[in-house]
Length: 155
Image 1 (cartoon, rainbow, N blue to C red):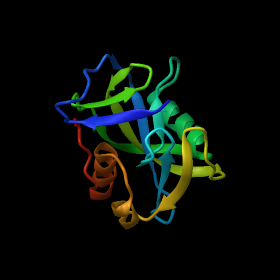
Image 2: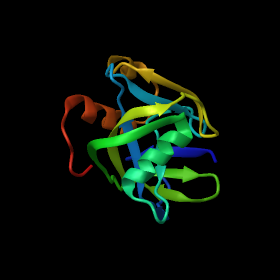
Image 3: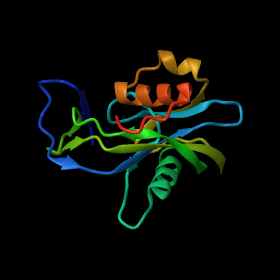
Image 4: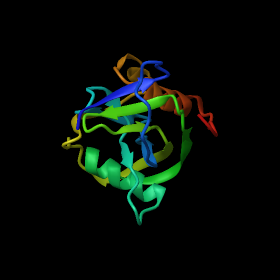
């Protein structure tokens, strides 16, 4: 389902839903970060998605990472909480979702890199390589927070 991201845009449509989600900064033993190029907006992003009933936030991050990248992970920490009411995602079906995401830290424990219906490229990047990749500001902020080692409590 195609989407358009709006961040602090006065012309953005008003949110009509709030959905808890997890994203994950997955870092391998060489210090590279796992990213996917999304099919819905063409931007590079962290794996992640909507939390389902009956699962924990960590289980959501683990499931979404496997579904979107083929990589099995374990959660090792938290990068931050991101709840900017000025950041909304507008979907073709009329949903306009306000961001509510906890960004977790994880490490790979198995699996094989592969694309999914939500990603058309999946790859490992050095932290410096991420600077040149096209991505929405909120994802860049999460990667920056991880790189700086700071854990923002509220964003």
